[in-house]
Length: 379
Image 1 (cartoon, rainbow, N blue to C red):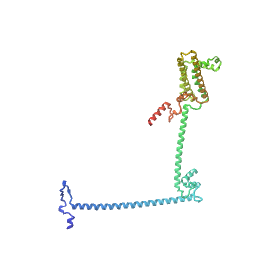
Image 2: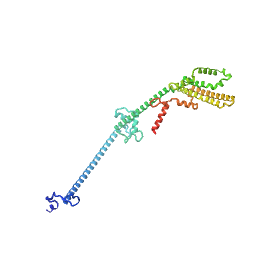
Image 3: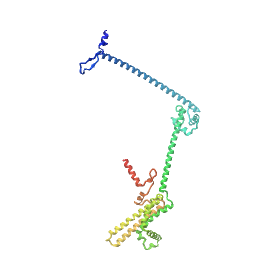
Image 4: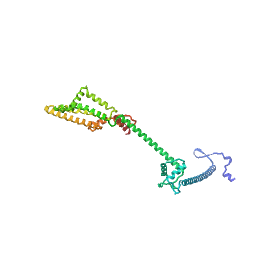
């Protein structure tokens, strides 16, 4: 009775709600029901904690057991591999001297794998497993036949890979050689033949004809008429002047032919250089004209003497320059040491570096523009 009075609420009042006198008039449980609920919750929580601890301990024991079993399997596997390697070592060690030489390894592998193995491949295999570097395998360095087979396969794959790379490299080099040959054939930068050497000196007749005006004082001397060379020059000059607009015709002909890449480079170079030398002859004429205006008040004899001397110097310089060009060209070399003029000719000459990677010809001015654009993009 006393127990029921303090623990179990009266049945008649089990569903009676007591209204709180506090704010909000919230409904609350009687004090004896709250105590009972709290005790029950604590009991359930304690039971859950005990169950979780038991599950953790069980999982730990299972993990330890699995690790133990795995270690035992690994040890058993290592033991079997060691026994297999030891048995194979005894079979390979024919003379039972405690080591396997290259010859014994080659014979044993060929017998086990039933295939012929090159001595080079066996030596490579020996280098892989011979940790001591004494040229033989001891028992602790020896492996199973399967490991030797796998290593041989790795070596074979590596050899095939290197062979494929070498073949690819050789193919690329062959393509580069063919491309370089095609460029050479397109530009005809081969060694000049005897005919090319002779033809290469003919363009210098153009500046020589235009420069004879500066040599009129030397060539017009009293004893000059008996010189066969001067007679030949006079005949050539007469033929040259007999052609209407001969200077313009020669200029455009040389300029056009020098752009033909099939003509030998030496010939094209001399055509361009002859044009530049002929253009350079215009400056002495300007100097003579300006000098005549400046010295107009000076005595006529002094002016004439200065003009003759200046013309003789210009003609002598022209003859020396053309002589250098002719001799150098006949030797098969480019006469490219004339100051200013030769550098200008080189800039106009097409070269192999004007080809792109695909073998397409790109003129130097366009190549410079492309390089500038690439530099701007990089910046």
